[in-house]
Image (cartoon, rainbow, N blue to C red; front, side, top):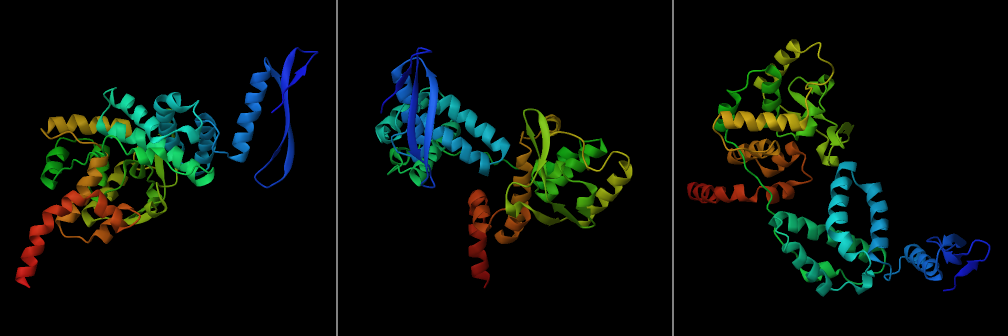
Length: 343
């Protein structure tokens, strides 16, 4: 792997041919290196990326991974994903060649992460991010096996799923006074929609006894933007009970000059409002997303089939609903026995 000296400038340059992914031959030249070794290192790194050789460094692989993610993921997802990788994973692995990363290497990194006192769920998320990058190498760049998968996970998935009963929600709602506040939380509790889906609603999306979910409101670096829903299945029509339809009609009359959207607030402001009024009502503090869990819990306890709940919530299929709410279905085992005895 030769490198050449520019005697006029006193620097080195790399000049070489490479084959692109379509099998076409190209010449590449890059000047301005202080040493011959730097020029050779550039050529090696460039060829690793182009050829997708497993000998590329983790840093080179990560750059390819980022470009691929940019074509397939939402901006908000990429921001959180890349922040985790670049803070906790890249510094440890960046200089290593990916085919030199072993389960023992991953285990040593895991021990370092565990020693920092992060929560079980955060450790679990960090391991999943590392595994995702290495899976990318296995799928597209010839890595024979994912060492992160062989090393095993750390932490555990502790998705918080607190929920309120109907009585709890009534106690909370009694503390609200402003029409916009009442309407917002009634929509979240009685439709099971995500907060972004509700904040993105316009009056054109309200159709009598239904609302049409076609978009969601997200925030990135403090700026709001409207984008398509979370998944293809999230685009849906949600039927609403008659009392909620009547509340919406009354709310519209009260806010007819406020603009095309139903609500003029942010998710963070709504979260603070939820926490403040939950405390005022003497209730367990929950997240905005837990109002969605509360809606699902209410339907499960009422015996609504999982496939109907999945369609209402915008899940990909009933299996997703059963996985997310498996702990709630545990309580129906005695009911099954009772039904069988009745039959």
